[in-house]
Amino acid sequence: MGAARQTGAALTAVVGAPVGAAALLVRPRLWSGLPERLGVWPRLPPGNVWIHASAVGEIRAASRLVGLLRERGHYVCTSTWTLPGRAAMRHWCPEVPCHLAPIDHPWCVDAALARVSPALLVLVETELWPSWIAAAERCGVPVVIVSGRLSDRSFPRYRRFAPLLARTLGRIRAVGARSELDAERFRSLGTPSERVTVTGDLKLDVAETPPPPSRDLAELLGGARFWVAGSTHAGEEAPVAEAFEAVVRAGLPHSLVVAPRHPPRSGEVERLLRGRGLRTRRRSRPGAGPLAPGEVLVLDSVGELTSVYARAEAAFVGGSLVPVGGHNVLEPASAGRPVLFGPHTHNVGPPVEILEAAGTAQRVADAAELGRALIGLLADPDAARARGEAGRRALAEHHGSAERALALVETALACPPG
Image 1: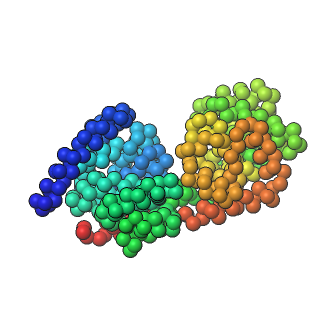
Image 2: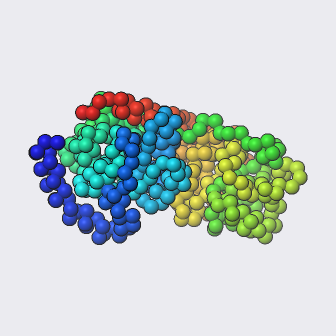
Image 3: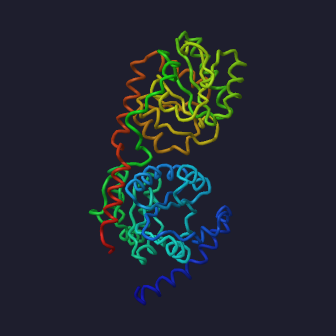
């Protein structure tokens, strides 16, 4: 590193120190895991691929890319800003190191880079941290963005600072944008045009063909016409039951499958449903014969919800009538099913926006609205199928996003630094 560069980095660190201290004061949650946030990581084997994603949703999306890189023989480490994100990644991929990202201050990012010694830094979505990216350049570590997004809300803010941001964007080796609109926004902010391609949105890259149900589950479902309430939380099963009672009163010959987000709650859910006079069965204790009209099946198993969505006529996705933030709306949508959810969807905002724009998804406020929406869907199967297919088409352009991101990453790894 030249003397001028060293001096510039030192001055930046000194000037930035008060900013880092202020961040710790105004955001007390940053004190959690403070050594990691200061760049004190365990030393890792040099030459790895470091993937950084903001929080739970982004690290979940990145986990597919992590898996593909590991299949290709690359050593991968990950980071995220939040404690839930770190916990989630350690749960999904316990063999992949995951730590809290360093604060965007030269001393912190230099310390982390020295311990990680990556061959490449991969940033997911919109993690444009100037000190971090500049430190990577000083260390000869190329930076790639995958699933790059500049939302309608954030883009005007970035555009106001475009002259300052252009230097940071000029240091990025490649940008894999989630859409052509995002790609054009990166270019307009100063990213060299030849470095920007469209690779798709990792969050929307779901399997095109849902897995088939196991033989015994297929026999249990039989030829039943049913709808699904998936990933429900406490406080949601009662409204779901009320909506199902409205479907039954409307004379529709349908059953219901309820899949609690946490299977240990299944006994509690079964008691609630039986307490309302509903004929209820458990996946683990199915009884004799296939599911009959008017019956409820509590799915107390793990890993079968996706295949059940694929057999349903409509789906309600939980964590949304209560303030949890919503769960995976893509599984039913990718199976070509119309999707319903409540008002609380802040954890799944971008997929919800796409499905609402396609006419596949509908937001409901309470049990009464859920019941009316279901009656409309179940009474007109052709219209429901058309709505579901519209969602499947809207997601089609993102299939293969992880593979395209992998190609971008490997191309960057193959190029010499500079």
